[in-house]
Each structure stands twice: as structure tokens, then as C-alpha cells.
Amino acid sequence: MEYRKLIKSAREAQKKSFSPFSNFKVGAALMTKEGKIFTGTNIECASYSLTMCAERNAVFQAYFAGEREFKAIAVACDTEEHCSPCGACRQALAELCGEDLEVIMLNINDEPKIMTMKELLPMAFTKEALK
Ligand code: THU
Image (cartoon, rainbow, N blue to C red):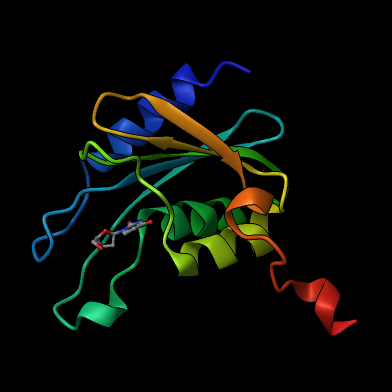
């Protein structure tokens, strides 16, 4: 699967980051199974815990548009380390996008590291547990 367009979309989204406190800019681009792309960036609040990550903003945009089936998400940041979704985002992605979602983590050089949600969050708590 060619993810060049998805990676470019994540980089574009990253430019819109509102992160005056951390100055850590993150961009996310989520692709549906049909190939539609929804993007998000991190938005920070002075009351820090109200900050919302790029990944969850992208997922919520897609859900708002009625999308429910997803193929991959690209996450971009500007560090040498690959941008790995935080714990809260892993939970949201596992629940809302499924354990087969491919997570394309990028470093500053756009070198991708690809893992599935299942690998990033084994034994996720999902709605199946409530049955
Ligand atoms: N951040 C994300 O947007 N995604 C992640 O997976 C990790 C962290 C944001 C939240 C905050 O605005 C900044 O990065 C520093 O934690």
C-alpha cells in the first residue's frame, strides 16, 4: 500500500498545530477503507489536561462525517524519534478504528515505522467486553 499521500496530508495538518505550551507539533491523517482522508492536529489549552491530540481530532472528524471503516493513520512530528500515539489515543484508535488499523509513525525525516493497532495496544478494552 502506498501511503505517500497520507503522509503528505499528516504533514499539512501538522502546520496547523496550536501548541504554544509544548511547541510539539503533531499532524495526523486517517484514511478510510475507501481512501478518503481526514486530518487533525494537536490543540493545546492553558489548562493542560484539556489539550486534544492530533490523532483523536482526526478520528472525531471522520466520525462526524459518518465514516466508520478505516485502513491507516499517519502521525507526524519533528523529532528524530518516531511519533508514537499516546495511551489515550491508542485506546480511542483501537475502539473507533479497529485493531487492524495500520499506524504509520513518522520521524522528522519521514522515515515510516508501521505497526498495527493490535501491536500497539494488545488486549485492548473494547465494546466486545461489555457483551
Ligand atoms: N500529542 C499528540 O498530538 N499526539 C500524541 O500521540 C502525543 C502527544 C500532543 C499533545 C500535546 O499537545 C503535545 O503533543 C505534547 O504532549
